[in-house]
Amino acid sequence: MMVLIAATVALLAVLAVGLATAVRRPADVPRVVRLAGLAITAGVALLLAPLTVQDSGAAALYLLGVPVLATLPPLLAHRLGRAAGIVDLLAALVIGGWGLLLALGIGVAFLPGALLYAAAAAGSLAPRPAASG
Image (cartoon, rainbow, N blue to C red; front, side, top):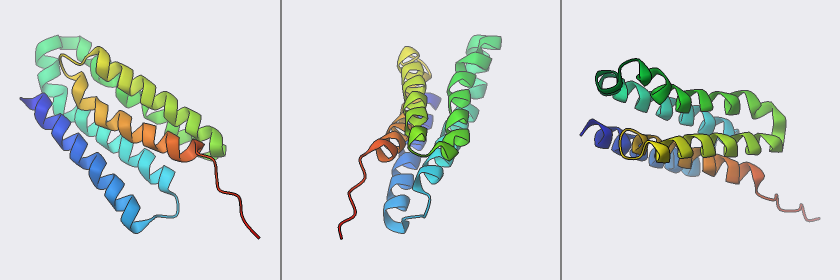
């Protein structure tokens, strides 16, 4: 039941981030999305920590730690410009892959965060319209 709650909260948070960035249009949308991805992924890990420790013991460290660690490179890569999109894509693949690997247990709750990083990658890697004039 806790996994369902964590997944639902994460999905609602991702939708809220998408809505907020669409309405407010912050100057640095990719950075906002990356920070939100870290917060959502870490929040899911915190919500699931008691259940995972009870079920898996010391293995909870890597079960919950891999997705959280995957959120750190995109935060550091924001200075790379368009290449940061590749780092976002890698984070989405790691978090999404880990979520699918653990999908019968806690992994489903990490999938909304992976969608957020995939959206950040799509925004960073999308071709920019040519300036007319």
